[in-house]
Length: 175
Image (cartoon, rainbow, N blue to C red; front, side, top):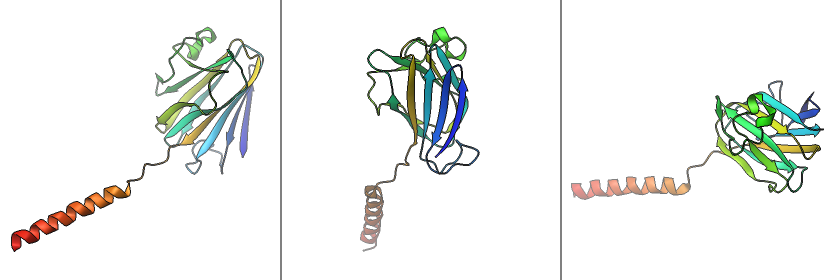
């Protein structure tokens, strides 16, 4: 597991990668998951991961949040200039890229909740904001590769049946 630490504004951002990784941390298509770990040591804090290139289609799930009850952390997620997270204006006080809508994870959000699914490979912008509680905390988001959908065996059986029926019809016309 390789780790990259970036500490800014009393917040630490750790990109934990599972599997093998080279210098291009997010472009190794052999990875099936990686975690974005946000730790903060006082509020308010803001942290942006831009750009965040992902080389495969993926889902984003909540893996861990240290808050409880009404504690919350806001996040924005952008792709190609389009805001994907817009359910609340809770991040607007942070200003800058945080204005325009964000989503929140609260102490009551179930671990394992899928926050985004079926996102396309590309370059994203990701940001986090906490203006209150918990004053110290940790948030972990898991990015997992979307498995390709296999053509079911029934599809091959259907094609075989249609081909067989065509051959039977052809033989019936000859007879």
